Image 1 (tube, rainbow, N blue to C red):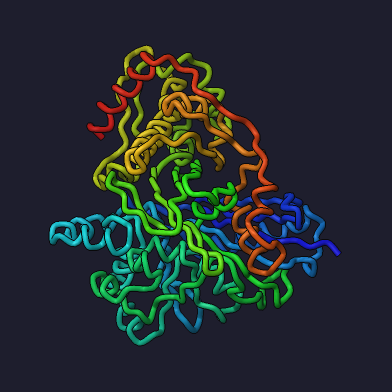
Image 2 (tube, rainbow, N blue to C red):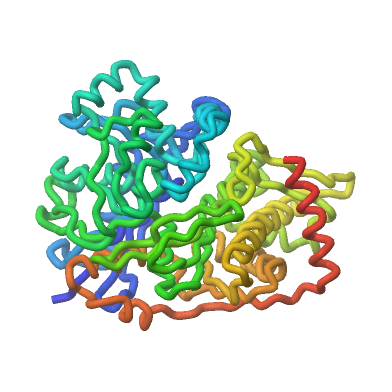
Length: 492
């Protein structure tokens, strides 16, 4: 009898389901986008029911494509957009408000207020994070303070907080399990990074009752079992959970200290395995948990660019420069360069290493000769410039440049972007054959959690290189590119 693992990748703009066999080969895949809600400038929300409906649909489609019987499913893994914050009724399971998405900036004022009171150094030491609206705690505080009756209900124990993984786990188990894994918990501003437990002082600082928090568990292991899920039998173990960026590290087999990957999704995220102990960045990066498998824990240094693939989506939907996102590469490649145009994609503020919540997108260097092709090329280059800044900060923290890193995510399929990235970094970039490494990581964790695979060596042996991009740009051209980027980012 064939054995399969189902991976659910609940991203920022859509849900992907992958069905993998015991050799980690993809047998079925389906993706579906869901609604993005923008109530006010700087606000971004999702409806959990949209996410759940998309999840159920892609599970069915992927299983049909794989021609897999539901009885052959050995485990389910979940990976998810991190920091996005939900609060729901413990009895009915209904959210009391839309999810507040990680990109949302409505709590920037509260973060600035806490910074003004000198709280950031303490928060950074305790959690590995900075005081920014990106993270979950201030979003949860906003829900408790702004949804009528929410705080009183929370203090009575009637409400549950969770990131998207927790909400999906709740739904998959018919409300039997309220838990998260350590990687997602490490993104909330509420977890002591060294102890990997919820911290009472953090909860007090952000006004969060402990009663709403889920249980923190390792990334691999049985969290619960399916119950009452349309299209799935009861009793399938949900046995692996990790935030999307950490899951991609697993999927990229970055198990050795110093190995790094960059995921180009809605945002772009560069993570490096920092080993078994917390490392504190001195150059604007974050410290986070990479994974916990049994008693083994790995930490990571992380740099986050809030906008990557989302800038292509904006060019498509906001400006109407093309009809399909895949058309951006051909459009950008139709010109030799950006024509002097620089695009700073700070459409949701600037993340690491700048951490400027007030920053906004900027397009500069426009003259009469500029076309939509130049703007498209400048947008792709802007993403690469953001990752350059992150890589430079990481090199300063570790005292040496990274010898290379692996890339994944939808935008990593863009060869023009990948080549420009390698040219800026003067570092080889390696893209695997399978770029769905986020879902692969979740599947692998679930398989580890149920004993399908014995250890990480099996994933290392299954990982296959696809294409490598080596630096080609002349040094004087590179210097000129970096000079105009530095000037532009200061103005954003």
